[in-house]
Image (cartoon, rainbow, N blue to C red; front, side, top):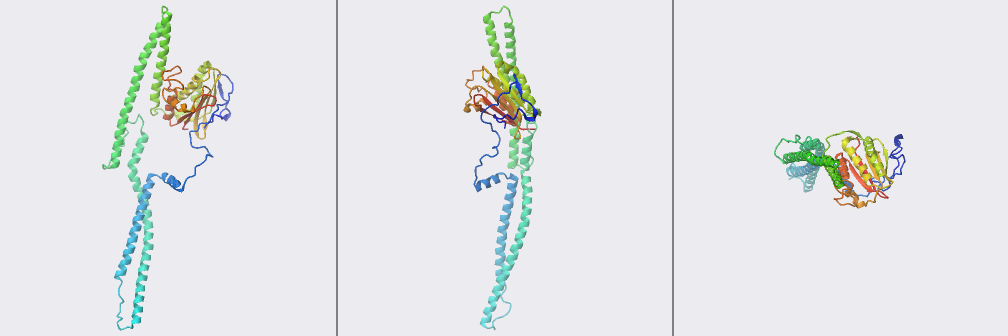
Length: 434
């Protein structure tokens, strides 16, 4: 995380911070750091009960191993029950088939007969015990060996049972708005629950493909149908304003209509860009956000100078994969938004890029009016402006931060913002490095 208190970016790697439009090093933005990752090292850990720890371990086991363990446990339980039943049956059978004393004792003294019968009974119990003991020990060894084999077979059976789900997962990973038309699971096999699930998933993909096609056609048609009349209006108004015989009232009306027309063009461009940003990326190229940020800052430097805003750029190389045009528009919107909503005199703006704790970070902070903390999240919604109604478009269409969030999400990242102490915002974009 690039902390708003940090001054590390300026001197890292031997590079000096670029300052626009005047060469003065401004102090870093203040305010609480934005943390959008896992808890920082040293954070207080909440103690968990043994049951919660066991549940956490179970939650980390894959479904394949859960099925395998289930198969193994069920087999061992069935084997143990079968072994117990056999043990009882063998003991009962031996007791029932144990022969009588094989010689005649009628002529023997009673004491001798009693002693012989007692010894014969003792031999019977000893034989049954030894047979049961030997049977139990050998059966347990056999149960252990077959149990290991059952776990291996259970793993293979679970893998085969989950193969259709793996096929669905692989298909879902390959899906995009360009492959949605021809990528299907098309699962072969009996009409069971998995086949029904795969067919339902294929039907959903067909509906999604129709929805994507409808959206693409709508964006294309809207781009043409909405831009053309506005372009014609602008041309007619410019011609009318260029007429030397036009009255001052007519020229004033024409200039007002041109401003309204420009705002409408800006709104339409923002809506079309927002629609394209919310779709899956079709362009994926290696991008250095340092170059993207430099381009955005250089393009907006004249506007910052006109507004009296000093821009301080602390840019370090950080590489990712994505759409360079969308990423440049994302950073440009952040910088442009920070310029618009700044102090009228002696405003400041900070742009930072780099790698922090394994994450690619782009951070833009600015001075400006105080932003209540409860208003920050709403600023990322379309047509939302701070302390302004929807009809108030004096500072833009209210789509800048919405486009930023859509672009960042399309690249698998996230964007957060916090109020800056003294006024303004600190906006942090976190992306996956290449």
